[in-house]
Image 1: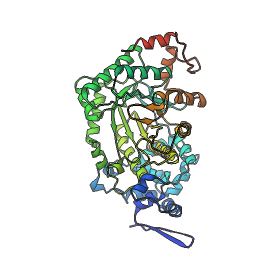
Image 2 (image 1 turned 135 degrees about the vertical axis):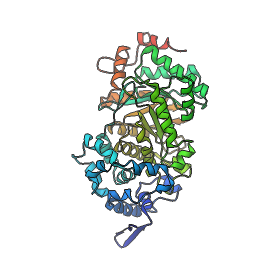
Image 3 (image 1 turned 180 degrees about the vertical axis):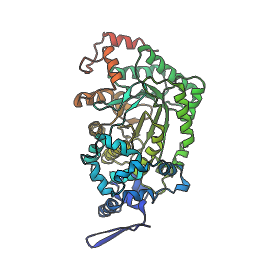
Length: 463
């Protein structure tokens, strides 16, 4: 057993195990404090970072934070580890790995080849040694491209999920919010509805409505009703026009059991959706959501800090070649991310760590009304993430989700980011916007005239 200890000045610090090192090296986080895992002082946090920086990367293959015999996520991580991909960095310490990631040698192609050789614990560890700027710089070098009806994750692109939720799943309300988003050029990543009730008939009804709209205007995007995977499977059995299978996931077997899933069920969802063959340019059919604190809230964190458990959730997603993965960064509440500083840091961590593991990461830039955060803080995070090359972000009407009762981004926020940073939607979707008269030849989306042909066409589609 390794001795996790160091000395700062006249004081010695010793940590019980690798889990304690990882937890104490984390930036301050209310969830870790709630769990009794956090560093007791800033000096102890520095000591843990020093210990972590000197650890060999390969030690994470031997000292497992969640026991192999107790957890199918751990077994997945270890059994699928690619030793050949890991070889170029296998002799490095965590601190050396950080320096390497920031070097010219670690370019986009190199990081893509490296991803299968990295475990989530390695990636979580190195992120704890990074400043926010480091997280942005490394993530910006990671390109993860996925395809279904369009191509997401390309350089110079910023995707968006159009989230037209309604508290009663009213078709007129959802249609109005959807058409509003399309006028802003939102929805290339997915038009995704969180249903108010998780029932098979309601899921089918919403899928049919979205698919009718998509087909009427030949919109090169995908739709998703974010029902439980078992509901989606039953909808498929009844002939529903389902594009993507959605599921919330977490970083331990026990936490996933709390979501009513396991790896076998996720595989069933993947196979069922691919069998429909509804994609036109690719067959990436899975959509996963995560969020720091989910394992702790289920009492299924095994004494591991919340950020490391979050990165383990990305290992769950990786074998299923998802089209989309996003962290809903501030959704759970201040119990886990207390204020804007913690939310911003967590968003940058999640995005960078997911990208290093080879995932098409998006972020729901959001907060709850009882957190110490506001929309100005979300402006900061969304701008940092766009600079970091995030695959997509989520937008809701007026930045206020009236069904889930939390604050996110508005449609015009993503449009503004695209204009500010010279980013475009997915290429197929951008071409559609131009055909519809919703953007000019430079890809700019000015507010449409009230009597424009495009506006009349879209409103004619309302149910």
